[in-house]
Length: 268
Image 1 (cartoon, rainbow, N blue to C red):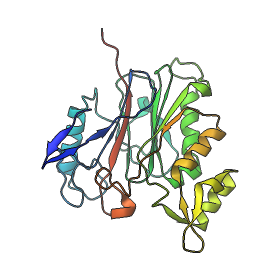
Image 2: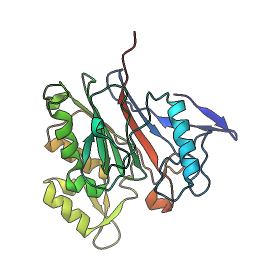
Image 3: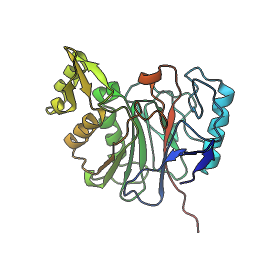
Image 4: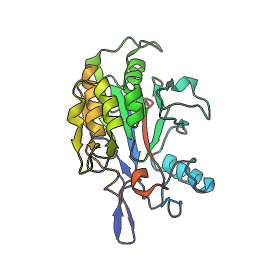
């Protein structure tokens, strides 16, 4: 990873997932501060989202910086995210498409989602010939974004055979932690109807009918129910780590980080 020195402070512009993905699978998560970032307050300084009120000129500059610093093979396939469960094949991508996930079997197709408290999920297989990224807030988790993503990843397509569950690798990126994610009875009830062990993801707050929700635990419970066991990451908090991450719940008006994954094209 490359570090940048600015104002006597070491800045960490990207997180590289710590998981046993094949070397051909490249994955990164941007952080909110970057020495080459352009966005002004309250989006300081490496906002990559066009829909949050930031100056689009700055956002496009930031996206160019992202592509240059990470030496991306192609422009990321930016989605119009809706907290839904649509997961598209990168081959079917078109600008402005509404989806909350993208998967690819073709080298150099850069799949991406934007987040600022919601959970970004990176997926690949042990062979490194399929990758996917999902945008999973609590609504997406409840509706079935993980189930949809796993179904698309496992399906036999593009000349690749049906994938065994044990072949799937998962990395949970920066999201709001249970220390900051307060929800009401309605959210807890939704997950209790969906998952037998959902109660393990909720703890009481000092308010009646309010709970601290662990979005990482909820995601893991869903993966476990699907028979997925190789799960990594899940140790961040976008809310409390203000020096690293954007957080919608903390700041309301704020930017977004990008979670990126692609298959590197083989070169001789």
